Length: 278
Length: 257
Image 1 (cartoon, rainbow over the protein chains, first blue to last red):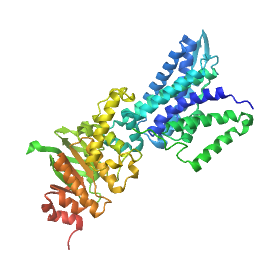
Image 2 (cartoon, each protein chain N blue to C red; image 1 turned 90 degrees about the horizontal axis):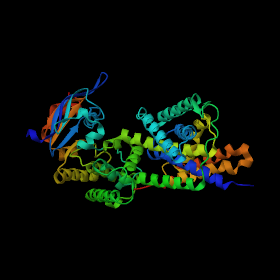
Image 3 (tube, rainbow over the protein chains, first blue to last red; image 1 turned 45 degrees about the horizontal axis):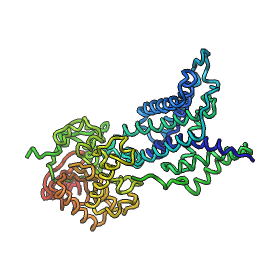
Image 4 (tube, chains in turn cyan, blue; image 1 turned 180 degrees about the horizontal axis):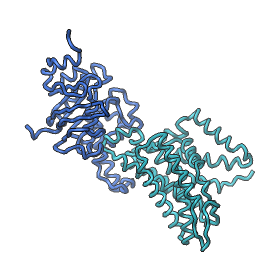
C-alpha cells in the first residue's frame, strides 16, 4: 500500500490553519460558527481570481485573501452579535449558503473570456510546497498562542465563560466579538487561498455546509479551545480518509466511528484539558 | 453634605409592559457608606441593581453616579466609571484560574497596545508582570493567594463568594454592588463576611450597596437601609428606624389582626 505522506502533511497543514481560525471563535470565544466554509471560499476565490485576472503574485494574493475574508467576517459579525448558541449556528449556516449561492451566480472575465463561477474554476496557479506550509503553520500556531495569552485573549475566554459577568467587569463584548470574528475569518481565508492553490481547481459546492462541519469535527475531536487539540484532531481526521483510500466506501463510516468513540471516552476532546494560561 | 453623594436615583421607574418592577424610587447614597436594599422576594431589588449597572435603562427618571447621568453609558462603560457588582448566583469565570479572574477585572485599566501584548518580550511582558503583581496584591488582601493557580470552579463555595467580591474590587470601582453576598453561607462564614465588608469600607474607602436577606448581617453593618415592596420604596432610615417601622413589619409579616 502506498501512502502519500507528503500530500497528507500538506493537507493537514492547510487544515490546521483553517481549524485554528475556527478555534478562536468557537473554542476560545465560545461562539459556535457553522459558516466558516464561507470565509474559506472567500479566501480561495479572492486569491485565485487575483492571480488569474490580474497576475498578482502569490504572496500578495494570500495576504489579500486573508484581509478580504477578515473584513467580511468582521462586518458579518456586527448584525449577529446578539445571537448565541443554536441561533448563532443557524445564522452562520445561512451565511455560508448565501455566499455559496453568490459564487454560483457570479461571472468573471479571465484573459478576455467570460466565465461563470458555477462551473469549476480550473488552472489556478500551483504554488504550494511543504516548506511554505510549514512556515505558515508555525506562524499561525505562534500567533494563536500569543493571542490567547494576551489581554485580548483573556477577555475572549471570559466571554466564553460568562458573557454577562464579562461585560460587568468592563469588557466591551461587541468590540471583542467583532475582532475575534475578523481574525478567525482571516485565518479561514488564508487556509482557503492555500487550499485553492493546492488543488488548482475549485467550485462553489466545495465551500458548502459539509466543509464547515468537516473542520468543526476536527476541532471537536481535538478539544475545543486547545491548540494541541487542534493540531492532533486535524492530523487524525485529515489522515483517515487518505489512509483508507483503498476502502473508499467505508471512509465516512470510519470517520463517524472515530467521533463516536471520542464522545464516549473523551467527551471534551482528545486534548481538551490542555489550554493556554496567562 | 451634598458634595458627598456618590449615587442618586431620581423617581426611577422600570416598566415591563404594564408591570412596574421598580416604581418612582428615589434615594441617595453617600460616599463611603454601607447602604442596604431589602424587601420581600420580587420587590425589585435585583432590578434596581440591573438599572444601576446599565443592564436595563429606566423607563422614567434618572440615575446619577458622581453627577453623571448613567443613561448615556453602556454596561461596560459604567464599570469604567466606577461601579462593580457581584451576582446573586455566583458568576465567576469558572474555567479560568483565580488569578486570571482578577486580571480580567483589571482589563479596562491596562494600558497596553494590542500588538505589544502579543509579543512575549519587551513592553508587553513588562506590563503583564506588573498586572500579575497587582493582581496578587489583591489576592493577598483577600487571603486567596494560595489558590491563585487553581480554576475558580474548584474553589470551595465560600471562597468563590470572596473571590467574586475581590474581583469586583479589582475593577478599581468606588461603588460596589453586592447582590446577596451571604446567600448559601453558614453562620460563621456570614460573620466573617461582615468583617470583610466593614474592612472594605474602612480600609479601602469604598461605598457598598448591598442586597441581603440575612437580617443579622443587614442590621449589623448597614449605615442606612432602603426597603422596597412591590417596586416601591416604603421606608428608608437607620437600622433602628427600619426595625420599628410599621410599614416594613407589615410588608414582611403581613397585616396584624
